[in-house]
Image (cartoon, rainbow, N blue to C red; front, side, top):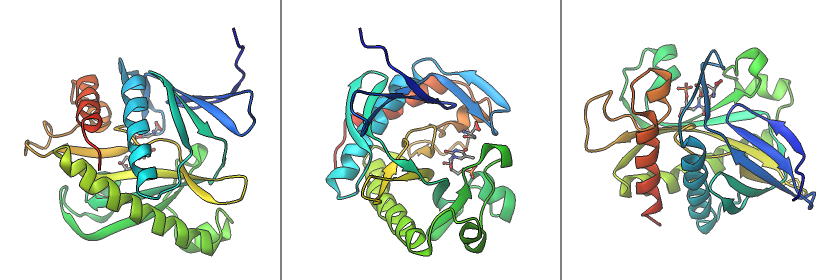
Length: 242
Ligand code: TMP
Ligand code: ASP
């Protein structure tokens, strides 16, 4: 039996080293947190649902020419990924107003944005992942101006792939959060995960603002049937390719 060394344990995933220093193993947990870990719980099966969803989405993105850290799914809850240096930014893309955008701007929930909005948040739990301005991002040297331009372009390209993909699945991609890393050649590649933990996904056949939610908002706002929603996303996602 190989003894795996744990490199890092986050709120929803564990990263392990492998025999190859360029490759890491990501284990997806059932643990769920919200509101900067003030709310904690567990969603039965979430780890395997998210691992399958993220693996499939990474494959679709790779096929569309977007470089990701994904190598292969190795078991229900595990995937092999390229080791990268994570850029300490959470890049959020929004197509429809929801969540903090509504809270901070007064836009009504469900307002369709004329063009996708890209936002940068500081990935820093101690500070509560604050929204950054470009000048603050540069001041803190979280990325260079050139990298910011590239992150924006990559985020929009990912949206251009994922939006029609989810549409095929009968799901509206409301918004989502991305993380990027620098590979050994200092190239920016997509990292972390894309799953119902990191996206807002609305069932197109349901107009009811509570019923339609197929993502972590079911857990955040105690809407019930959280695992079922994640499972349904997985089933639909796995049935489609671009
Ligand atoms: P927000 O409306 O709360 O700012 O969230 C925007 C998107 O980012 C939404 O799809 C949920 C996702 N998200 C995360 O993946 N992690 C986080 O810590 C937060 C706050 C949001
Ligand atoms: N993942 C974040 C946390 O627990 C917040 C969220 O997704 O709402 O801290």
